[in-house]
Length: 474
Image (cartoon, rainbow, N blue to C red):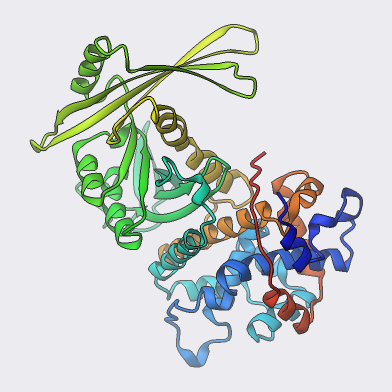
């Protein structure tokens, strides 16, 4: 919804535009799109110079033409405009107006080539860019942007899952993972992601852990579970007091994960399949029949057409392979609904959790925590792979620079979500776009063609306004 104060202080927002004039995009409309970009970044993060000011530059100072903040901004702009490849930076962004805008922002006289980005990022530390991602999250948390989406009034939902990034037919680097099928070996890279997600559709990267072999011929390959142990240490160090409820798939239903969550004071909901933890499954089946009070039916859906039947068992003791004891709770949800042919279908989910389950919180734990895991796939990985960011494209052959491009993609995805769902663009602006994918080409058109003076940019960057969010993931 639109905030009245935002319109009053920022009178020329796209919220005022109609479908008829939005796509004409004369100069003033193009400038308005850039206002949304600069205004949103300024409101939350200061400016792009400040955002990347702590990234160390490993290059020889005398040979530097473009600063790291300038190059990082161009990399983020590449992803914001959905260019899909590094070579498109020079082909699509190098216009007279573009150079003038970049000169105003970073005091440079030309637009960098995509290869310039690659050469610079080879000499930077990827962890510096991870810290930028974390700092962006801390600012959103500090500004309480996501407070209304907390579970049980306290916990932020954080799914953790892995995804593939690039695949090669030949070895790309010593750190490649390998997989052989029918005599053919493929070489690929994966990353484990922890994202902060909300029911409204936000999915912000919190922490990334690259899954890669330490050498060309390791005795055992790296994997998601090993990467989780490393990621947990880094995540706790970066957000030591953040109240988190992890939502994980069945791979993580094991003693070491339970212990890590206990040590970090994290809550969790983990998918429980019939094949995993047989002692837990058996005890649940036996005790559920003896506890008829631990049942609840709930109707959901737009017309309450979906029925969910919950049952749960508390205080199940589990001893892991290291003889450590864990107290777990199990929730089962049987969902009944009709398909398009009018036939009744049933689906069953089970989760284990370290939160005491009751009639007051079972629906929240299942629907707002356990089943939120799919958002890391849809709003996270799928959006970045098929929504214009081209996550699976090889932006570089250098393994160090590849990580930095990955972090820039995460930064761009965060900014893009803030742009599209914020009140500066407004409900009318989103309606005029028609779909979220249309914002990127409009932003590209504005960046290429709008000539903006320094005074206009200063006004954009220093105007006072409020931003409210009304996420729409359609």
